[in-house]
Amino acid sequence: LVLLNGQHQPVIPSAPGAIQRWRIINACTSRVLSLHLTDHPLTQIAQDGAFLPAPIDRDRVVLSPANRADVIVRPTRAGQYTLVADPYQRGTGMMSGMMGDRATGPIILATLAVAGPAVSSSPLPATLPARPIPPGPANAHRELSFAMGMGGTGGMGMRFTIDGRTFDDRRDDQTVHLGSTEDWTITNTSPMDHPFHLHVWPFHVLDDSVGTPRTATRQDVVLVPARGWVRVRIPFTDYSGRSVYHCHTADHEDAGMMGTLTVVA
Image 1 (cartoon, rainbow, N blue to C red):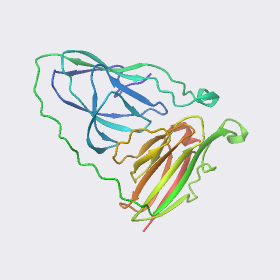
Image 2 (image 1 turned 30 degrees about the vertical axis):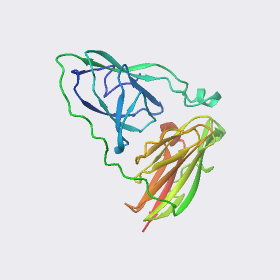
Image 3 (image 1 turned 180 degrees about the vertical axis):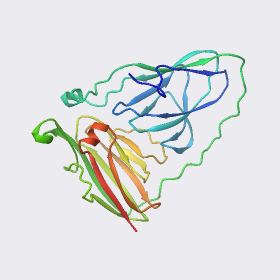
Image 4 (image 1 turned 135 degrees about the vertical axis):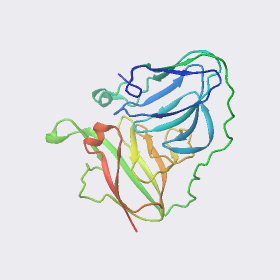
């Protein structure tokens, strides 16, 4: 069961030509949402609370757990149109099935009910105030490895690690100097995708192992493909202090797939 603002398949009223801005937050514990609106594009303008360089018409918006997307919806004619989450296979093999990650769906999340006289709306701007990717070269390069396997507490169940270790809040896993910019490569050796989330310091995605189109904007969650990798550029320029990075699949995070990061002035 997937709810939208606590409601099961609510109806969203609109009129032909009317513009609505939807901020879609994937608050699911582990489900990846592959979203489309029947007969209409989703015009994305922001990702994880940061503007894209320009509006992009998308047939589909994919959100891993904790991802956010701001989209513009402008229905062209009267009718009933459904917002649907299609099946998304985020893993393969026995582990994926054990963790409850087999693809299901499609799931109707809401219905856009368009009726009444047409209205006129202003066009969207051609560009948006996105922060540019920090120029290279980076001050440092780091590699992190996400892994999972048998052998949890007491030798039973699953074990979830980053760089071969489970979370310990008394340990400093990464130390970074304030004002530096770093490139991190997050490798996923497991047979399922993991959403990498970094608190406090947003990043730009530079590349990944499956050729996902880049958003060219700052974000704080990125899906690391099964048996693949993602490379991100992180400007540690705004704040010093201590925080964490982790898999945003809640049960993986709770089982130890988390590390600490300290930025020192």
